[in-house]
Image 1 (cartoon, rainbow, N blue to C red):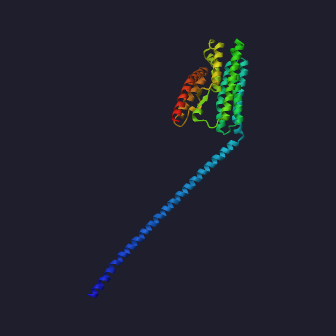
Image 2: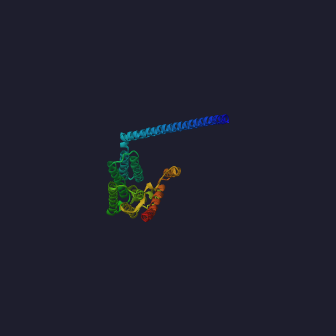
Image 3: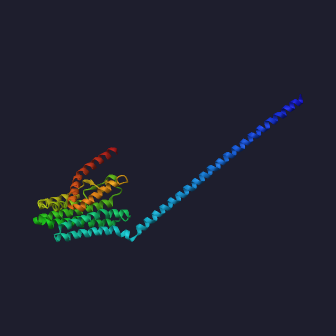
Length: 319
């Protein structure tokens, strides 16, 4: 009986032995699998970290390259010279318009004022693009605007039509020029004292800008070039547009700014098509196109006043 019991215990040990060995082997295999999975994950994370570091290093190099290029562009002599050169060129065209008016070359005189207005549109944008905005450039631009859009249109209109009515015509010319000077002085003061303008204020002008005022003042003469009707350039009509344009420049009404038009990837082709159409119209029918654009701008003035008031009311309600 004892032998049988002993034999049973030994048999049990023999049975239990292989099972424990199998369990230990499975445990070792599981630990090895976990270890290998952990090492793989660590390697993957390490590779990702290296990729991120290399990517960030590449982006840092790109940023440093952009900063260095911007610094070179900012310190370039040509870059500092270009915006003021455009402003001086616009002033030269304005002064040449006065000389052409003295030679009775009325169409060329008005055309030179228009070229001054076109250059005035770009000198500020060029200065901001090249990061060359300065107080000197602002003052030079205002002086150029006074010559091109304050003095030149008055002299052109006086020599062409208003000298027929003598002192009254000269008084209308002086009124317009003084209004233009006051408008530019107010703009300089507002620019110097302004902190951070709101988005609404950036999208609207206070009054009409000086180039637009000059084109409105010259509107009867522009119509005459297209229609050749002397009824349009009667001194009373010319004086009315001069005084009206001067009052609009010094007024506090809000008119649309070019910043209200935003060109992006979705509508760039539309803007390109419109600009191409306008350029073709200018090349074929200059005075007719300019007359239509001036009339369209005059129509948008009351709409701009209404739009600004409605937007301001909506902002005040939200606030």
